Length: 354
Image 1 (tube, rainbow, N blue to C red):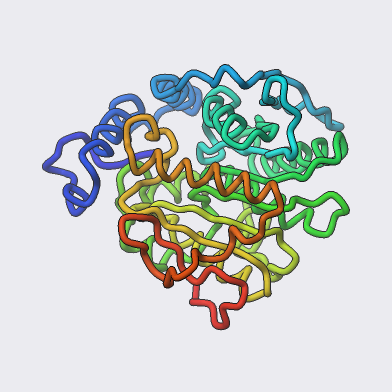
Image 2: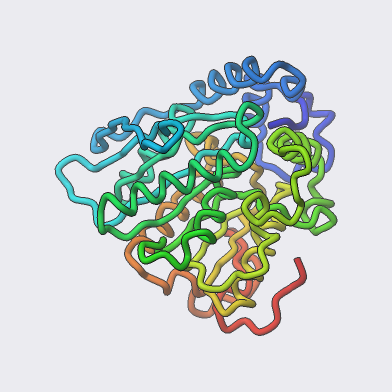
């Protein structure tokens, strides 16, 4: 996670493009997790990242109870954290995969986000503490993500919604692809500014290669540190957009930030699913950057975007596929003052190139 320094003179084209309160957030992130930290040892990066996450942490809603468990596998145990509404039975379960470039993050770094999803939807949330690179390169994180999903699926009969942020969005997508034909598959997936291995000559990769908080150089760093020697660029469990079959995926919502090099991945993934006659919506939130969930307490745009995400998860978990369709009378493009929803229904005929 890197970006422009706090000096307003170095903000370039983003100086007036982003709201002042978002710049306050960006400056605070960069003061707690400065761009140059990527040159430090991994253990130091994680310690600094975790301190930064704690600086933004919100208290969990009182209505949510939290408990930790372990998912046993043949070789190791995977820590998970469960969020449940006190005195209320859940009607669905969200399996959540945290962000951090496959290198950073844990159950604590995204604890409040999971708790707020639980409180906002009434669903149980299970957060997975998958193994991290470079100690555990690909496919370790995917294997753990899949194991947690299968553990949840075997333990109950409730509908499951997959949800992931950034690197976790990648994991949610590959789990959805791996389990689409299982008897207990996800009924929906919510991907939040995911990295899906898209074409780096595409729209947002070029326009926002040096965006605040995530640059193209950062993406390359995390991809290399996650890879094993000889990593195939066509491995769909590494880069979901490399898959050749996008059929039979659950109803999918992808939410990206306008000023994020990864935004085109959401557009491309939506197009691939629609081309396979599936249902998918891509929403690009205007004037926001990668990692905006943590800005929700102080940045109105981020708070509004998170509220939409929670509402979408609730509707996916309820099996409301109408959430995939545009609002009545809304044309493709950017609704005034709101997010950008494009080509939303499954009846879209010709997808845009990735």
